[in-house]
Length: 195
Image (cartoon, rainbow, N blue to C red; front, side, top):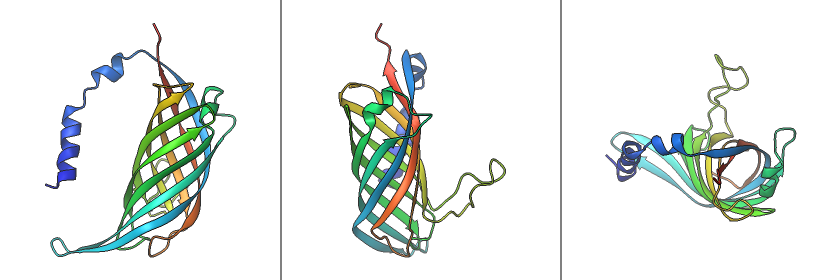
């Protein structure tokens, strides 16, 4: 078992659902449009003998403009309009057209709050396919979906969290490449009750 897999297993085994159920909270919708750029810092083609495979890995820097999406964005989440900067690791089966995953961290500078967070998801796959929906193919190239977790570290909502899903579309190549992208982010701002 790899060190990363063992760490994940330990985190899952330690997960206690009692506190999230018992915590008294208020929530508001967060709905944002994303427009940004990926910049490749480095990439590597990794060959493995056992099992036999090829994996393309890339380390990218990204910058994103975050704007509200009406009618779902709420007044509270307007504090997060601004920009995001971060780094992502991409891993692809064989090349940039293959399915893979991504993992990253970021700093989000909003109008009235600053957040820091992490994101993780699947790349070059479509989830909006039959039998649920018929919008995407299962091998949707240049497409990434995932989960974003962030903590508000200063500003109006300091101490609160944002939990969201995102979808990003970009130009995929055989190798990682600098490219622009557009996307959506849908989630909730979670505020602890004050009494």
